[in-house]
Image (cartoon, rainbow, N blue to C red):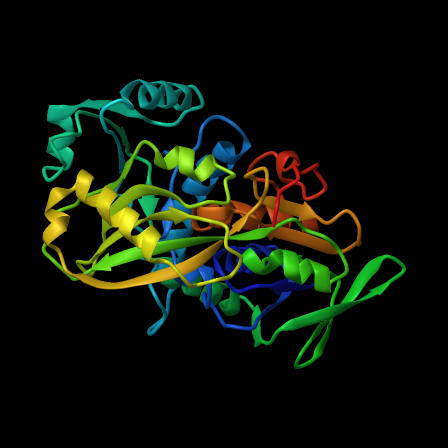
Length: 385
């Protein structure tokens, strides 16, 4: 079975790998190359700590488990010159600043009810894990299963492994499709026309636009985020650390600027500081307000950052679905067309589980979680573009 995967970000690479593992002949099409957009402009989060009970948490738990298997495989099979995933099961610390303690405690209790490991921390235990935390931080929760990869390298590793099993990459832009008797028969690009048995739309924030070119509608919008990268330093932050209002910012559907604190060190010695969310289309202008807010909030959590030099900042776009659940499965309008998009900031962590859900939808392989909540045919709330 020949399958065209549109998009070579983390989700597209994971779908390509899962489909080639299942025996399909896969061609991945992307105008920017592997990890050319969103997957190179994020933090590489593999989180279970930010999701309350529900379908996305179930998928995140499955994705966390699968990532451990895939990272071992990808790093174990890589050839000379191929990237490592930099998988790091560092764990996460969620901090409640004054006034947020009860809410975080209740959230963690609900998560424990679905099997997420979440240990409440008093001030002394917090500082054992993160000695540089502000004196304002007196309560937190430790999530030992949170992890991280270097997102661009991990995406390249998945694509390299898929290529090693026969997948091919075409650098091209999808411009349309050939549909006959209600079934997709070919994908048209600015370079060639690709005959196919199935198509998987993994175009991230551009998935709605790609869907339109294929003759269907998919309500995916871009949601902008900005990240600050400090100059390298000796390690002073030892886990992924974020404040309790991060969960609210993720779940918000507000188009206006939302910021919360997410701070972590990298193997290179830099510190990544996020995060922001706003719906401004694909504009990269006027990011200073977001950067100023996340910098101020980060200093409140880790005061030493006030004296740290900024190396660079970068901006990316998350694929936003109105009901905050990714859209994974058959299109429902055109036979042979499938979608895997709308993961917003969780795309890296959910990528392997998404790949296996797509293999289930297209080829009938076992599913890692219940696919029904993620079907693109579900009803969506109205949202302003």
